[in-house]
Length: 254
Length: 179
Picture (tube, rainbow over the protein chains, first blue to last red):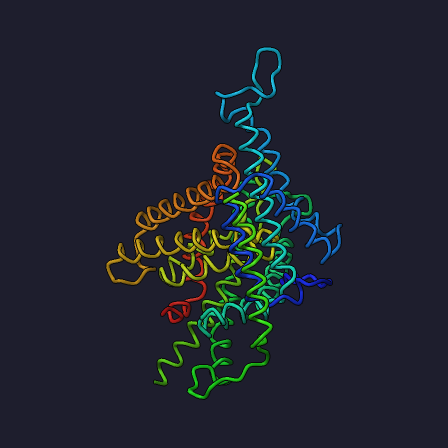
């Protein structure tokens, strides 16, 4: 199981300082909920989509859209049930299918959801996990919390593989043609879950001992394998992020 | 000083492993449902963490584990909200179980009190995702997620309690991992 979220590619988003990038993404995600004109939301979505396409290729850029496609279909199904009173826009005989207000609400919600999805995906795909952690450390995340996250990512593939092996071992106890569903699936999976949990819990004392032997909790100041750049480049990137967020915020005033 | 250092290393190791378990149980461990969907078993680990290790462990492992699962699974827009919702769910279940326990040890709480705590956790989880779904794509479309979330949460509570009792019997040293 691959637990890395970074997608290698090209473009300015990979060189942008991750701290400024995170501030920009958060600001823009908040600003889409302010009273921004609809064309402003879709302009931001278009920019996010083009940026992602330039970074990872157009084929991969459609992946977030596929992930949320079902939700958008459900939103379309619910259009006739929202804002029943108002100027009719789409009618079938005497039945009002959609009003202007319901279509406007659908367009606004869809634009916001797509924009937030693509902005967060852009951040996660163009920033290495090490840099994301260093960014949170720069924002005062405690060292022990960053260590927990690092260890979690280290153990995810190990526990996933353990679960798969235990599940295959337990399936040998069942007949070849049995297909568990519903309640049977739950009762069949109980031994597998219990074994996986016990296997994982048994590794905790060893991990704790390893941390102690590597000086965790020591009073000696730790060194960093890697750090984020300091100085002029961070200031420049923060200024750029402030300009982008301010430009989008001015759309509210217009 | 030495005792505190040992406990810090144990805390970090415990939380890291439980968080990884929560993430794996969200992404990898899925049970097919009759309505052609899947439910994940992250709530099993959250209830397990709350019942065995207390509210603060469940808060961190439940919140962080599901947030990491959302990021890895391509749903990073949900990550901050999953952190809050599942973290609160785990914390509430652990707090109620701890209050209900006469000895003060969470895992000694009676079964009715743990089920009651699980029910409240279910309400928090389902209600939280409904509110966030309403914010993202409207409250009426968000109603469609309630049945699946309810099934997932209830299955998580029932299986979580069953798994906790099984693990306590099968692996007694788990009691010494608490903090």
